[in-house]
Image 1 (tube, one colour):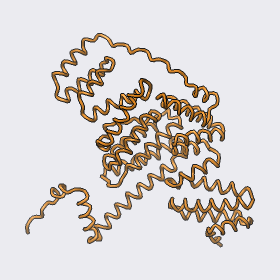
Image 2: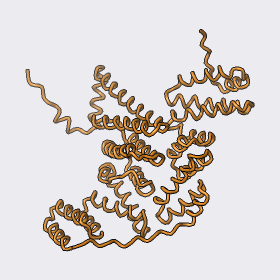
Image 3: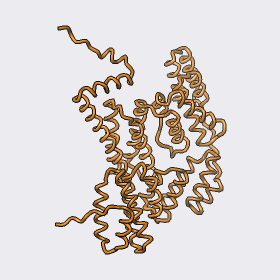
Image 4: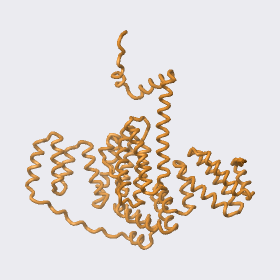
Length: 437
């Protein structure tokens, strides 16, 4: 009998699409192989669904429980990435990064436990993007938003995302950086752009540009050492030696000029006098024009959150401020954590239920109960309409049986309200039959 030929070297020469077609064709002929592949698919799908469910419920947990739930999500991501999963893990990884970033804006993380999770989440998101690159324009847009409009976190290293960004994504970031450098003579935005310009030079391998950027900085030992390392890595040893010799001639560091104090914008004075959504958004508009929004936002949001902890009206103002920035996830978290008014939570739930149905179930139930308490025909009719919406949300969340149980209990409690029962039936909602002993 002739020895079996090892096909692995040949298979490694095939592209992924060809291998997929070959494996799929074989699975159609081999029930055992198909069952094994389906089992792996179901397992991974179940893992991802559970990870999303954990994020749905984590917002309502305390700091320790939140960190534990997010840690479980990150463990799932790492396990699937280490196993070479073909699933697109980038959406879950990005959602986790955004989730932790927003939570850090709302909690006191003195232990640093949640912040540690953020660093790990960014690392896993970078790996997921490299494994299954998303649209480079969208990825670049997210990085630019985090860098220029975010609260100073998470920390992003362009080198980690370079492969996923590709030439198109890198070009998008470079274009924005160049525009900021041309338009902003000073301020936080310019400092961010200067840092990104340096990282872009490193990622692109432009040694001359990188050395020029570093050489333009005030003389410091760490900067000189980096120039030497860059030149040596590029094989330009004589230049590295010459630069090191010049750096040694500096006996002391040059003190940087003192930073000028930034004037307080008028909109900041208005916000300080009457903190709320309107003055916050006015401050945002003015600060964006001057490139100082990142610094202003942190202090202003801190004030709104401080007030939100004291009253429902202030919580609503915080939510409206975040909605004005189009930060829907952040607004939702603030509404839950600071107990915004029911109308505001219902408004948020209508959009939130599309991607995160499980999170919105308690809001719709509260709304139904609140409507029933009015005891008038219009409120009963609206309660029935909300029950239809709640039924759809439960179905989308995969918890249709929970809705049936909830509805059965609701009808039993309010069975004497004949007009309510009639409106529920008119809304074409099947009322479960009572269980008899």
